[in-house]
Image 1 (cartoon, each protein chain N blue to C red):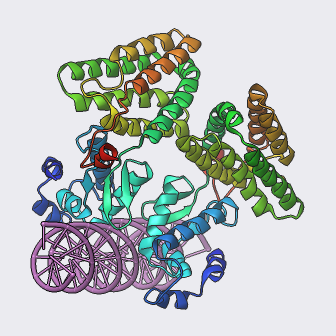
Image 2: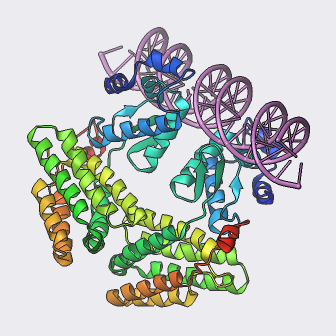
Image 3: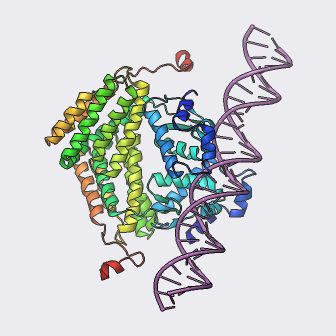
Amino acid sequence: MAKSANAASSTSKPAEAKRGRGAGKAGDGAERHEAIYQQIREAIVEHRLKPGARLREDALAEAFGVSRTGIRKILQRLALEHLVTLTPRRGASVSRPTIEEARDVFAARQLVECQLMPWVARRLKPADAKALRQLAVDERQALRAGQQSRAIQLSAQFHQRLAELSGNTPLAEFVARLCSRSSLILAVYGASGHLGCESHDHDELVTLLEAGKEERAIAFMQRHLKAIEASLSIEESVDEAPDLNAIFG
Amino acid sequence: MAKSANAASSTSKPAEAKRGRGAGKAGDGAERHEAIYQQIREAIVEHRLKPGARLREDALAEAFGVSRTGIRKILQRLALEHLVTLTPRRGASVSRPTIEEARDVFAARQLVECQLMPWVARRLKPADAKALRQLAVDERQALRAGQQSRAIQLSAQFHQRLAELSGNTPLAEFVARLCSRSSLILAVYGASGHLGCESHDHDELVTLLEAGKEERAIAFMQRHLKAIEASLSIEESVDEAPDLNAIFG
DNA sequence: TGGCGGCGGGCCGTATACAATCGATGACGA
DNA sequence: TCGTCATCGATTGTATACGGCCCGCCGCCA
């Protein structure tokens, strides 16, 4: 509830935005929707919107200065990526992944990302490697500075960029989506304090790829992902009166 | 244009459907949208709607007896699956995959579907194997009966069911989406007459999986997909006045 | 005092209306 | 006869209005 307010202030005052449509305005509408989508998506991935948080379309519409129509479109898009859950008459809320989903997502990542390593190794250019290392550096720096949101974002970006370097668009999109969901999973099951990826891992992985050691890169990625999955705490925080049936069954 | 008409007749007459909303009607609205989505999706996958065909929302809305609002939602969903292309002010049309997209899609399928074979082999139950064989049988039968649309649908279903049997939902969804796109690719680049999958292949694959021969199943799937990809004719059908420049360049 | 049923508000789902934009067609001029 | 421009029609994009469902509150009754 309080969260939608800060989102509004970051873009424009509601009243101004509402009139702004008629006159000349930044963003021709189509791009504006894309921007809003990205903002909401980032807020979810960075854990600024926590799983279970409700996303009322009226509030979002007023916050961004657009009509509910546009917001609905964006919410449906996010729902298709499993980032938000759309309950028939109850509206949208940030998805709360189940343990089964978490396991499936990480299994899928292991299958795809590992097999992608040979592709990446063969296509990796020095400039790409440099960019990847920069991401790893930024991530470590953000982590040290206590900017956890930024660190999460950068960690996901590292994996996404890696997938993009394979040159296969469908697979890159798929990995990107899995990474987003992983962020959500870490928000629910992650041990607070240390986010999933050990940042030194990323550095080391780039080294292996640059050296063309495909097999070792595969094994490394496998261990890397398994480590993240293993760091999840399976014990679920009790929301509210959840297990009365289970206890007294 | 003529195609939307038959879609309408299969469900209800437009006038009746329009009034029907107020009174009691089959499908409570939410399910109706899902049904419409499936119908359009099937029409595209079965090549009843050919790549490049325009999908005007007014026409679809009238054909199915709903408002444009619902149609727009469905079209956006299809666009996210790359089955239709949404051009900013020009509306929707059935996607026409490029050759690069085709190559990427089949590369992704090889990577994922092959690696999925061990999972499937280990989890395959006799009932599942039987169902898969039935699909293969139906496919061959449809092919002999000249029902090409049905055969295409069944072939895609075989691959989808196979992926579902891995027990990993995200990967199954991904494969399903890739199969849909493959149908589209075959519609554009497929040699007319024989659709992609040699139907006996599917039978043989089930046999390998039942026997638990994982490695051979992987190799078989690899060959199977490579064969489909190789059967594509790269020469592009001339749409309209395409090569005047190329000829007289 | 605790459970239950009616009732109101909030919110989503759908349809419709309006506005803006793009393509095409026809006329005019060179 | 060809090129250019203006106007018109068609189609999408956006906003708004209305209807319906669900949830929570309040009063009533046991």
